[in-house]
Image (cartoon, rainbow, N blue to C red; front, side):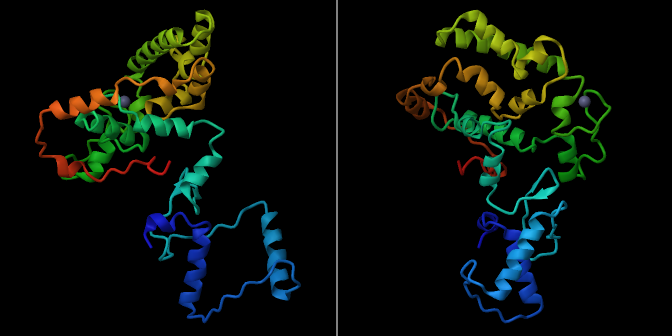
Length: 288
Ligand SMILES: [Zn+2]
């Protein structure tokens, strides 16, 4: 079974532990299905233990690092191991900050006039690297190519902090550029909504300029965490609330499929020697 498939099994850490115990102690195990509440003595003991465990203030942690089956264990916030389908875990956070369905649409959105444009692949690669914090910042390059860049990890702009995917958006030297970018984006959104929605322009302006995504920029405040989501190519619920009340984006498509096909046919083939190096990126939204 592939690690990807294994990670989708509910309570996979628990199953790995059971497997580990059986294997290490060379136990002969026969599986028997016991009907719930059927008066089976040992099943009742297990029930009681499970209920007791459920009320414990500190949850039981299984040290999963040494378990052979747990080749890959994803963890949330470097703290809680995810031992079931990641998509289902994500769904439970759906109501909070990120609109996953719309983020998925944004990942698949092709803003180029061409079905298989290499520029679109570049766009997609940017979105994937941004969202998974894998842009080639100095910390990553130093780790991957220590012979080329050794111990040069300080941010080239502020020379004060290690350049990482997190620092990239939080560097004080880059703040003003991001702020101006967000004002331009906010203004553009106001224009777009004014054209496509039938509400009063003043209410549109207010809802954009007072939203968490844009307010900080218009008032020169520190970047709001919700705006960081947008920088990392996620569509936040905040942004949806701003625009959903005004219009539905469903019907806005920039190019017809005929236009895209025509552009693909007339495109000049570019031979890219780096092609092999660029494979291997998995769109994290493939499952949606
Ligand atoms: Zn910096």
